[in-house]
Amino acid sequence: MDHLEKDEQEMKTDPGFGTKSLSRARILTPSGNYNVVRKGMRYYDAYLFLVRVTWLKFLLILFIGFLAFNSIFAVLYTLVGVDQLHGIQRVSFGRDFLHALYFSIQTFTTVGYGAMHPTGTGANLISIVNAFTGLMGFALATGLLFARFSRPGHSVLFSDLGIIAPWGKNKTAFMFRIANLHNNKVIDVEADVLGTWLEKVQGKLARRFARLDLTVDKITMFPVNWTIVHVIEEGSPMYRKSPGELDQIGFEIIAHIKGYDETYAQMIHASHSYKSADLKWGKKFSLMYEGHQDAVELYLDQINDVVDAPLKT
Image 1 (cartoon, helix red, strand yellow):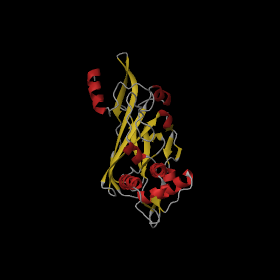
Image 2 (tube, rainbow, N blue to C red):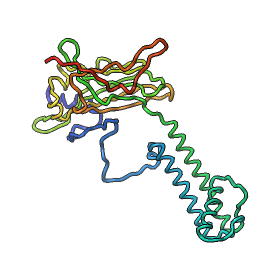
Image 3 (cartoon, rainbow, N blue to C red):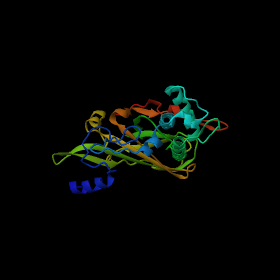
């Protein structure tokens, strides 16, 4: 195969990173995110941030925003005079602000206990804006909560390490394993695994890609764990490569898993990356589930457990 045919073949294999990406750093982080830092133009998507941020941060942001908006209205009520709010007597700015804050929260949330209500024109105008802001705020918060609850997690748990284990009589194989983290039903699960490395082509360094052939690349059901196996034989980019050689060429394995989640009635996707430092040689995975009379028990905390399996030299 000449260089032109090889380039055309690898262009089809390239998942989208390009052959000119010459960094030896990970293409994907171990969690499956792109290891790309965008510069030159900054774009902030508040919706995307609020949907993806952790629940603790999300609730904290909502609470701080709730207090901040009501504090602004409390200042406005205080400036026009709390004597325009029935049920509040002017004492001091600090005390007036506190009572105005209570009134703003009641208006913002449409609670309206009745002990306080606006009487002056200025206070009534502020109350209109206060109530409208509250309605919009709760509508946005409700939408964000729905988006967060309806957004499916991929539920695929990857082993942190890949292994190089004996295979057959005189072969070795690269393996990693996955499991369903949740108790939902995932079906028609497919695995697509690529190898990428740096190689000199006609005196110039270029990034290469090759799809790693798997012994099984699709399973119909995903009840326990699945060990994904690539046999390292002639034609594999890992063939006759030592740990040092794989590290020298910046070899990285990119695994992509997709399947159909019946709970959310939609496709799920998950990715993971393995560098040479993540590979354990002469190991094999130990069994992570046991069959009992009533059910099969799957031990997710044992997904990285391995035992020795010496390689033949």
